[in-house]
Image (cartoon, rainbow, N blue to C red; front, side, top):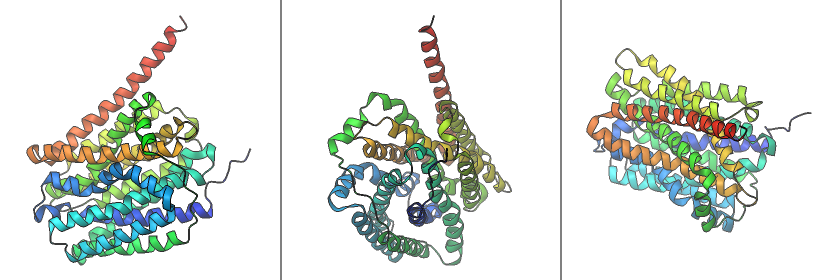
Length: 391
């Protein structure tokens, strides 16, 4: 029997919008050393790069309610325009750390709206029985932004300076705004504030929530502190090698997995992915002058883990949903994942201010490997409980 078509015109248009949006927000990943030079410690660097995550955790419910009132397209366009204004402010006042934080917080509105709206929209346009594959393929748009933004960002930083990083973000968001005007979004579904907190307390989500927090935390360590540790160990900021390898392997694995990922068991898959992420984090501890190519296998290990974890965890959340809970659990997954981003970045940033940047990668590696072991132990425990029922 022929499988429903995944890639449609609407899918491609949404794919390009998401790519451009993530390019804008990833372009600033080359700036931690600059932020340190104008007075930011590791805690503040972690906060700056995770304001988007903090905003998503705080705004996922209000944005969902606002979407119900005014529609997805209007909300997206308005927040895009606010983000463009914010990046223009950063372009003008790039030398002022306080104003950079203020404008970055405003720009986070655009990220929160696009993340929430695109996440809900993709569930509407992919076939019901191919959602993991659909999310995996759609996620390639975000993955592609990593090498594009980091390679171009390093080039712009070296050739033109810090201010033009923010101007480049304006260009990406302007094109995304124009494309969003031509896309016909689905009608919003009603989603109440009470529903979000009720979903958070669902007993069958506790393990998934913990695992997703660790997954989000690992991502934030790479996006927030990789540039810092590369500058310390190599003598210059070098993140494009990692993110290019990460994106290349993640895209390749998603394309290869798309046809059969919905059919395989998820427990061993999750455990393997966290083990690979732990190994990628440990690799940062061995960086030194002349070893910049070590960033490539680190990117490959992390890319293999990330490429599977994001769509699988997202779908496992939504599969726990009742009839009126699908959008709520989609938003809950986004909130938990991004809360992992911000909480881990801030906590490990504080630790890093005392113990150094290397401690951030070492501690997160231990957490990832312990999570892998936890998943396997939980599987064994459930197997033993089932076996006892048959004896």
